[in-house]
Image (cartoon, rainbow, N blue to C red):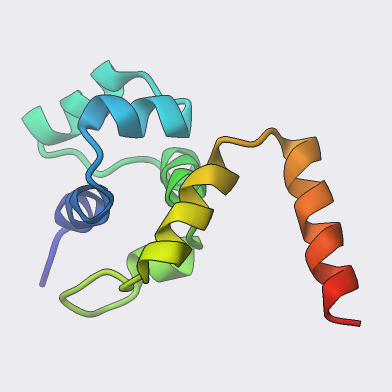
Length: 103
């Protein structure tokens, strides 16, 4: 069974991110992320939620059983990376636009 740290590493590497880039995108200090690995610690739920937001996935997806993270197509990966850089208001605008496109 994979550890949560192995899963986070897989998602990070799948996106080509360094630990520093994950820290920037999640809003967590890099020292916090590094300490998880050095001390083999399990991140707190609030930290995991920030990690998930950076990856553009749900906590359920992160914790799902299986050996590989969700595979994304290149356009999906680009969309999620760009979406993660938006602030909350900008993300809501995108959601509204998507909702209007489906009506």
